[in-house]
Image 1 (cartoon, rainbow, N blue to C red):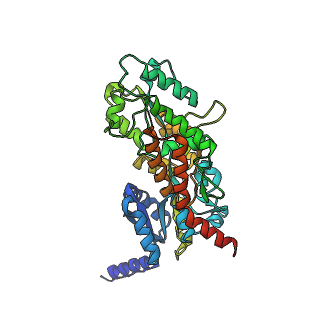
Image 2: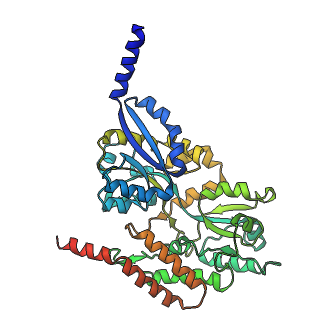
Image 3: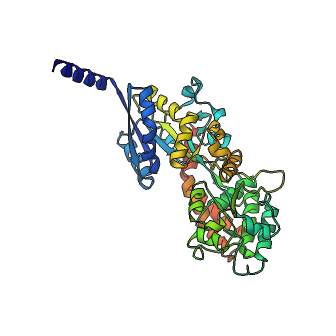
Length: 417
């Protein structure tokens, strides 16, 4: 009896000495990251990690509410386009000093474009956790019938193979590519490929009517004008069925669709689809894509920063990144993890590795998601071919300038401080 009492007291004492850190993770990651915790707790028995899963649909509002109520967790997973907003609120810890003193987390371990999404005015506010980007999913057999043994590598090849696909026997009612106008990504990506910065004057004004974005926008409009892409989204209700039936042969999408294509494409077409990096404007210019994904951030209000950093460093190990990929399918942010045969033997994923070498962030300002929705709205308008492109883009810039009005006012105030 005495032994049991002493053991109980010892156990209680051990618990009292443990530091509890709160970690909010979004979507399925909130559930799956639990599986990586036993090894962390084995290494760091003095730390207890309490993970709370947050649905993506509620995450932004919950974070803002917690900020206003001074009840933020110690750390969380944050979409990398949200980092500028929470950095502006001064909610995030500047991680630069932590990185400088770390041997486990170094910028050179990551894809440069992905790392850059976490850096604002030279300071790092997040550590990439997993990554995504967009590239080309395509039907190899259809492109081969059109005379292309490979995916298009330049805009010229992209347009040419599309026209050839449209001319294939029986393809009168089919399309070469699906470019849904309820997605802003293709329009922004080609704009970035053409060298547009999307915004100008220190992100104070829209630059969508500038020469570079106009050139890219005109390029994509040719696909609608020449009936190489369907206008609107109502003609394609199921992209997997549409791809399988040959209704379209190319589609820009992300890594989450590798599993879906494997699952949903018919067995006799499993060898007929492939992935490829995006075409570039010309043979000398790589086709850049979006630097997407989620990062791990530490909140400035945390009282357990050394413990939080231990967890961030642990989750940034190549071994843990690989294990997380095997559980979730999320592509690792740490390049060393990509040397595993899970990636080197996977043809579909290899294209993502090549594409991730050429990714760039969208403008790192809190207003970006509002701006992206406007790009989508005006791309849909332009695809109907009822107004000249120049007129549509000028109107888009006027809307963007209104969105950025408060930003200009704040920057003006700051300049007088």
